[in-house]
Length: 202
Image 1 (tube, one colour):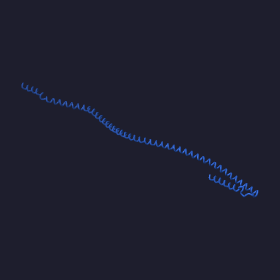
Image 2: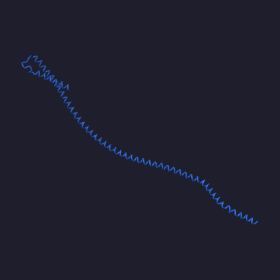
Image 3: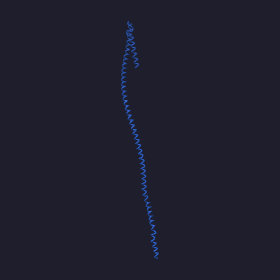
Image 4: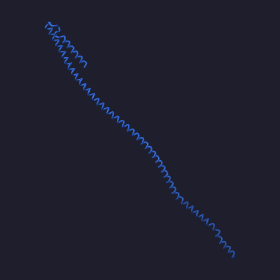
């Protein structure tokens, strides 16, 4: 009986030694389960900031690319504007030279025009003076011709009177033309003919 009791006691004493290797394994499984559950709950919270930061980095990278493109375009535009400005400066310099040359030409033309006007004024004054003299001479000539015309008529009248008087008193003992009647007639005809020709030409 005592041996059986001892055997039973030995069995109870030896049972903890048999189950002791299973306890660490259960603990490891429990820790793994806890870590798995913890990872299931923690990973989403950790992934959300990561995704947010990744999206933010992507947006910033896109903005950086856009700014880089814009900067490159601005640099090209600046170089283009600098070239255009240089060309415009050259064109402006050429335009200034052309304008200066045109101003000089205009000044020369003004001087030539003034000289031409002065010369024309002098020539016009000389022509007007000459025309005035010609008009005065023409008036004098017309006056003389008028006088000569009247003189011719008067001489013709005198010649006619002398001829009529000769016929009335009969033949004179003098020569036929001692009184100069024929000469007066010829002179009167010459004067009238000259006056008529001059009036016709004028």
